[in-house]
Length: 318
Figure 1 (cartoon, rainbow, N blue to C red):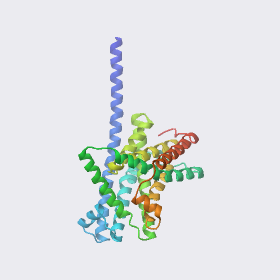
Figure 2: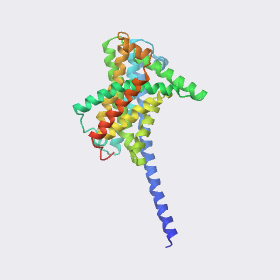
Figure 3: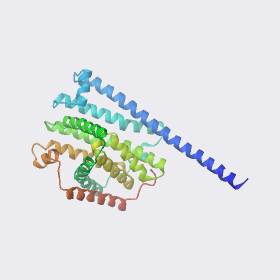
Figure 4: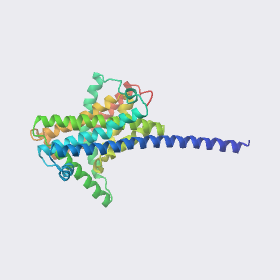
């Protein structure tokens, strides 16, 4: 057989293998999207049903509360219930169903078998506090990026919708509301989103691209995109990248669940104490800090990530 023909034959075989890999990845991704869609749909139906029969809100009232809640105890509690159900059913449940359907072992696949050491706990606590200032700095940079007029209008509308929802969720007239937000905004969001984006999608993207860095970037970009907030896309993607590397270098999803939980919970605490603490009020209302604070916070975050890289071997499989 001529050399040219041999090379052509090898190339065709390689193309077939690549197409098979591409189709396998697409089929896996479509399966996940299908589980996510039905989980989100069913959870919203359930939440609206509870809103009607428990909170006594009709359909129109429920939809209005979700998009623009008032500072009313019943409305805020319904909004928290809606957020908790939809987050858990959109992210956590689809991951578990996917692993069961395709017969993957849950603990080893999601890297849940490795516990957190006291040193790691301390590092992640510092990481979460530093992220408060680092993300604020990156948010300022994000806002300074000029956008085309139509895109800027869309970004402003997204930001306004996000702020209305946050203002509603962060109405906390008592400690019981604080605890409810720690559970909903802190725990449920951290567990669900980390199971999906770091535990499942990051290894999937890594295996498809054969590059861990691309896997981390793609999952972080998707993590930021699902929040539908262009004005804070960069800081959310940045924290997603940080979570991705912490997961990869530590080999434990508990690390990023803890980091995510602490990051969200600290923000909840800042909102709760803004009326009685001048610093918290300044952070929420003024939102301005010296550039050096933001740069120092980012340096601390990078330093902590470097410690994880040097002290812990990467997981052998992703």
